[in-house]
Length: 426
Image (cartoon, rainbow, N blue to C red; front, side, top):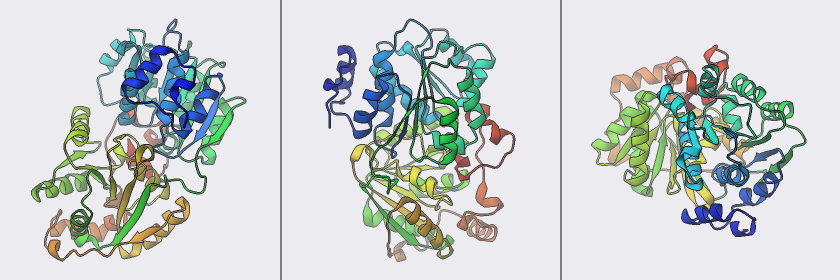
């Protein structure tokens, strides 16, 4: 690994990196930063948790002139990810006012006021960026740097029209940096339309989409015993800090309450909570709670380095969703575990994940006898869920959509177009 001191960075930027413990560059930072410093467009395929944020923020801060505002626009799929990018960026800049963050679910008037301070860098979700553009509060004619972070997720969430509209309002000579954990054809199609003479970097092994430090496990359990299976895993493997992903807000609340009733510290995060409550949950999870119970809203927005386990209470239908959720563990080359609970008729999904991500998922035979009479849901609800397919992740009740607003959803979602199973990620 190369030290940041070898990258010809400004003294004040090196000092800021040192304050937060950044001395050596990760592989993605080592390869991307020198190219980005040459004002070249870059497309980067890199696994989640490899230090991509630093790879685009560091060269932007190094080259920003502060003579025009804003100079950089950074788009992220979720408000949580936007917040975390902004937090990291502010640690490297001279003034907090140099960075503005905009996203749905928060006061747009407060965000308009923040833009009046002429920030050099604006970070936000595409829908809210467009809202501010249409109100005349955000002008992109002086943009020199444009970043698409987690591009595959933004397209899955229906942001394609928004992204292309925003890009069309920026100068042709800007530098564009596109980062994605996977590189489907639709991502490359956007890149080819809006990027010129770009460098393509594939960081790490292309055979596996997930960092090698994660071990993958699953257990077979039918609906009424899924919570018992979860408790048995917690008892046997004692996760130090884990995210438990579920499909619906109802299930998230029920499991969170049931864990607390069993003396297990847990916090809740889903799209039905206010932004203040979501931020509180994330803060408590970072500092105190062992477990965060979350719907897909958090799949791409949590960067907590101490996460040891990712638990899928409901197996994702899409293997790429599994990839992104599991990427919350084993951050920055650490190690971690992934555990998924499946029913007998979902074993085909396990095989799909193994093939797509080129991993092996080991089956666990957990002793659930101690917890067989412990439930997170009422018997009536369990029967209701089995009848309508929630245990299999299919059907009307298996697709409970989280509420949101224009600022955090793509136009194609708002128009009712078909989109992928990442729809809970906003």
